[in-house]
Amino acid sequence: MPDKTTLTFTPVIGIEIHIHLKTKSKVFCSCSADYTNDEPNSHICPVCMGLPGSMPVLNKAVVQQGMLAGMALNCTVQPTTYFFRKCYFYPDLPKNYQITQSDLPIAANGWLEIDDDAGNPKKIRINRLHLEEDAGKLHHSAADGRLEGAETSWVDYNRSGLPLAEIVSEPDVSSAREAVEYVTALRRRVRYAGASDADLEKGMMRFDANVSVKCSDGRWGRRVEVKNMNSFRALERAIEYEIKRQSKVLAEGGEVLQETRHWNDAKGTTTASRVKEFYRKFIVEPDLPPLVVSPQWVEEVRGMLPEMPNEKALRYKEMGLSEVDAGVLADSIDVAQYFEACVAAGANPLRAGNWVRTEVLRAVNDKQVGVTDLAVKPDTLAELIRRIDEGKLSTTLAKNVFEGLLEGLSLDEAVKKSGAAEGGVDANALENLVRATIEANPDVIGEIRSGKDTKGKKVKFLQGLVMRETKGQARPDEVAAAIESAIENLK
Ligand SMILES: [Zn+2]
Image (cartoon, rainbow, N blue to C red; front, top):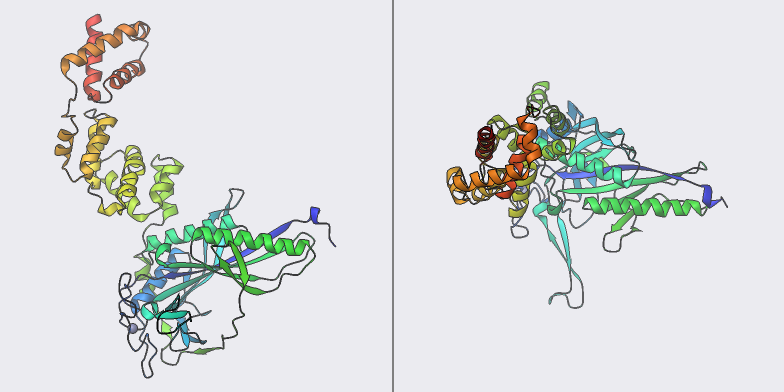
């Protein structure tokens, strides 16, 4: 029996990800791929139902989206690939085989960079990205009237034949946290490429993890495949659970068996599932020719790939944005484009970055809309920011104006409604306020008058005091002018 107290365990993890590729129709027929709110079995035809005599025709858009996703993951596109029939029997697969590229994929040998647990950059290698079709969906329900006492299963073939990309990593992941960082980075990049929406709540992204553990005494556990994770949190918890379970088995001198286990999200455990004896064999799909992509097509698709998030974030930092701001803005391509449009319309990048990260994203969150659907367009925000920079609006007032813009008002209407009216405080009131502030700060006035305030910091300090007194309702430029003229009059 090994001494448990001195043993350490190193996890070795590979991740397999299925994503739905974004296309109008399914992969081998012309049924619509968008069935979200439609009746079960309303998007089906002889091909995706696997009826005898039906023939698959490869959707070109699927190949293009597969190439884009592969390129976004730094893969090389393979010029010639094949489709196979992966034969097994299950009610969600009416033709009894799935058409898949398996290990002769459209794209291979990619990588993604993440931060490892010590915060250092680490490459996770991607073995391949292959195209395949999705199966139908089974729904299990309690007994209905027709089958008394029995549980009933229903099958919906709307999902049958939807285009999938399976992305297989090398076993380079070392912890549950790294796994989450890897899938997050991957999702960001395929979304940027426009290859997939990878919406977890809509089942557009699913995970399997291959987990094994190496013990410091040299023993290895066998590889365990954990299936059925549909969220980042489930992936993280399932891997953590497996690492603990396998380490415990090895610590107690046992053996970790090679098996497939099923993640139970409600219980927070994995359980051994039946071995897939129904997998028979792969044969070349006789109804589809080899898939050949020309170098011209590959280059054409490469030209469609936008600047990727890491490169964007780096460029934003060079514009002077903080690491956090740059990361948040580059997280989604829509937000990044909104920010860039705002800067292109003349806004100061730092201030624009700040506004988008705080006010714009808050509004997006509150209203539960995409940033592109927001009533405030980037050029309007740029104009609002310009007015702040010119001192015509305080930041406080500008935020009120922004609220008006969100309701669909024009900038001038929103300014009027906010009460700012471009000079929100009565001139006499402002003069009195400035005088009181000057009288309350004789030391500061002394320094200004003796010429020590060469950088204008003391004047800014007084301006801040007055702005606070007006609760941000005054125009900063008018306050500054009032202070300077009051000091001038003292001389
Ligand atoms: Zn169909």
